Length: 556
Image 1 (cartoon, rainbow, N blue to C red):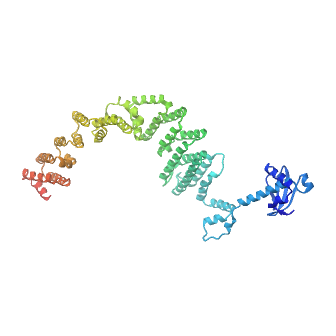
Image 2: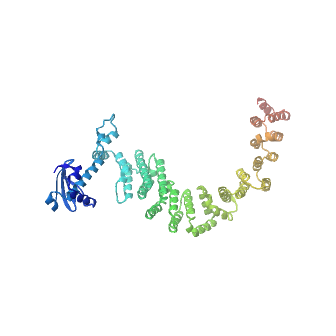
Image 3: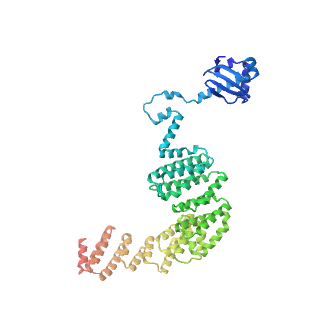
């Protein structure tokens, strides 16, 4: 027997070839094995077939069947040879192109070496090098940990992080600066893998990585030398990825597992100390997607609020989280109960309001602020509640409420920003609105400074001059002088003459001279030199014996 393996169809009897093809199609040919060079054995329909070949030619074959004993050929041998030919052909296709190994390179590079060494040699080198280089070993583990199958992926990543932390932990339990850099690289590598896993919908793998980072790295943040801020950023990235993970169609068991983890972790000091509690509570609010879970989360928050000596900032964070979870439809009864508690305790009411303001969500306490105003009648707390309602009105773009709330706050605080809001959003007769507002200010004896600012904003310059005269202060004219010089120059000059006359009549020495010099200099700066010149004439005529002021004026 001596023929080419590729020529089976030409060499074998047709009956044997047909029988062999049928056996191969029916899956009757078992795995091919080789016990020595060029000798192949296969189980064909429970019978052992041996085939001796050179790389391309069939030299001898044997089978245990009766047909082979009678004729020296059978369908079993045909099936075995067909399977062997297919196997060799496939192996050739999969074999890497060795032509590359024969090419010549201009430079010895890492890439050229990797192209020309076998995987066994590379694996041996990597293993040996990892034993002698700790940083390389840790980086290698971080990069390829996902490739290692384990019964518990969470344990795999926990081991990786614990090993890395232990490698760089000092005797005082801190992480050295150099160790922090290596640990940071490990965390960044794992976060990249978590992101990839979530994108590929390997949700359990992604969560295993994120859980390891949150549970192992967060407690270390205050013990890391030199890189604490960058580690804080990585924890923030991990929480962003958790939020992204929760937006995916997770299996219920995995979602439950994530919820259990965050319930256990949310009140740990490490998260509070490093200002991550707000983020954890936000995640739990998303996870509280049924009445039972919402109730458990609410109870966790209530337990936390009952603790003594909570830092004020953290207390507001917990209160805001409680406000958020109480918006769940299934907790309407608890929300009403909390509302009653707030209205009965002004201190609690204001803490809740302040927490909402601090988080930029005043609309969450709109109803509470409206009801609270029935009980808080004056003082700073009242203005805070009104401020909440104004913020909500602006957010809701409700002009009527904006004007109502801004007017009330202007009458209480005399801050012109509220007057400007009124003017910006008033839809009705503005002249009538202004007249009534002015009357209310006069009725409650508003400060002259407020009235002056109001008249200047509104362009009521006659009234402004009148108020400035009543104030009787030269300094109070400064901020309005430029506008008045353009529109009411005569009135401004008369006001300066009157107030200067009074001032100089009651003051002697260098101080009045400096005051006069400052006024004249300011008038020149704002483009009112004629008023300055008229004042000089008046002063020289009125106070000829006052040498100090005149000398100062002549210097100018």
